[in-house]
Image (cartoon, rainbow over all chains, first blue to last red; front, top):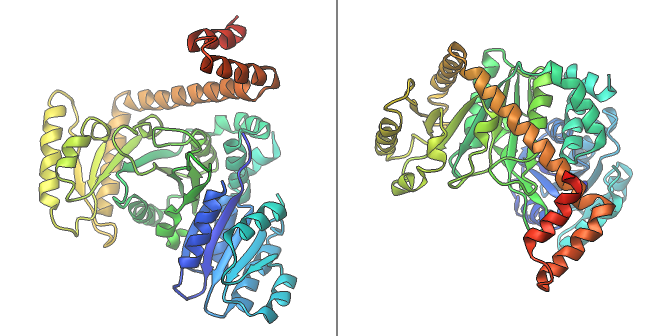
Length: 131
Length: 313
């Protein structure tokens, strides 16, 4: 049987705006991926623990509170600590352009702002998935 | 012993997760590990949880798990959601209701897509149960997809099957009684904080009285409110009673034998189908025969004989 790409979609932090995450989750599903939707208010520890149990290839983070520099980076740091750098991490939300280089340096491989066509995210994941 | 198998036996979460993935993908690596762990299985008690969409299965499982954790038991949860027949993708959202369990080291939650399997389960669920069992979990809870009428496969794998209903189903209880209403070891009327509970219980009761008049055990009906954590302790007690009931006679052996039978059939089915549809020797032949059936050059039965004849000889 062909291997399916498994993606964890999660929202770290405290903002409650999950529409974007749900739109992306559905687009990934329609692209044939298995999407584990963890929902709101996730800590980095919860996200990484879930990623382990669900054996995901990709973590897709969504955040609109402005705390991406802290909360996105917390996730990639923890992944590094646990030797899980083979998990592709992407992020989305209202993220200023000037933050993107630092996020990429911190291990967020793809950053997608408002208005990104969902196909772009699908293509990026398919091209960059590491496992 | 296989490296991943020995790590699973030690309870290593990453190896448990990996082996479930390998089994889901029918990988050859999984087969040797599954062979290694089988002799270490059989200790976990398996609870199947089924019921209509939106009946609160995931929330109830979360509450049930909290209760088992208080008793010091380790819990494995397999939550199954449907795979799209069109894209092959799936949105697995049961974890949302189990968020509080995410950081508990005594709990392992795995979401699985049905991947084309009907009946409310997924093909690799037998493997997943064996893996969690072998890893030392005391209780393994299997949550089926939200079922309609005939998705009753959960009874093949569970020692105790819970059928979750909600108040206000009214006549639809009558409508579903030929399917899932026959498989319960325990009925649970969840969302008991909503009106109409008594009527729902009464309707199930009349059904139980008709069906169980000549059997030794009357199927209990419990009311719970998972949202308000009510009725959960009583539910664990009722599950325990059912376990004791099974163990008193030889029913427990019968039940387990059913699971191994279903597991064996599933492995054979999967291997046979993979052999016919994946192996290069057959693939071209199958495609040609499908075309010929369409053109009326051959009928479907003769085509099946042509494929099966080669294997069964």
